[in-house]
Length: 301
Image (tube, rainbow, N blue to C red; front, side, top):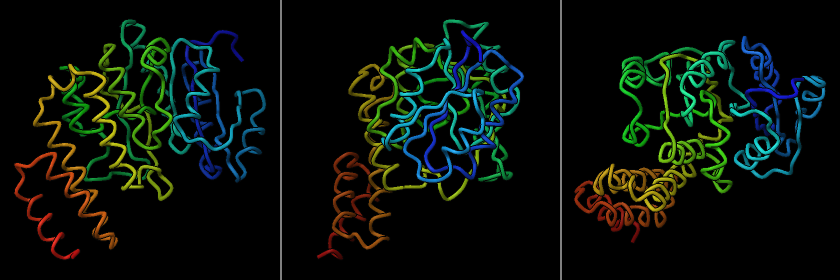
């Protein structure tokens, strides 16, 4: 194991024994060799411990009681010795040139706080495309650069496709440990508002879509997304000015609307009406929100 690696790869895992070995193997197969691999087991109850022990000293392992992925990632980064951090999910796969491609960019742009690339879907095209970021948009981001609008309009950053400066990670306050789904977006916002963020038009990882993805908890995802947006404009007033009041309000209200629809479909009528109240209050110019608020309010009575 390297005494002073350039990159520290951090994997936080929780009950992913059926995918974990493939993820670890994809990291160990990297063409770039100056890295260490740190795995944090966030209180798994399956065969995760035995799998990790089978790798011997090829990785460093830490254990904690279940506190969520953000806390597990922070623990891993605290143990890291590299000046660059690569966060990996324990169910996705790195391409063998993942670290080489990302580090080549930051070596030429040392002021960069974070660089990220694209991801492909492991089982083939999803949503009518083979990559997470559509090809035309990927080329445009690499050519013109990443803007706050890009991060705000779509959650284009996947930390498993990124390389983050250790200085940037520490300076912006690491992961928000109260977040379990939207921590990537939150961290990306904070880094973007403090350091240059770069993008390369390369596919560096493969995303595994399955029923165990934490992002499939739609209720929590929407609630956290609202929190992250509100946190962005509160902590960085310049962000609110760049995006504009109406755009921020429209995006938050739309998430309340989606939250309300999900609750109504699950028969949580009163909770749905409360969420629609928030949508209407946040963005009162939407007639659609007023319509649903009136219709559902009458039905709930």
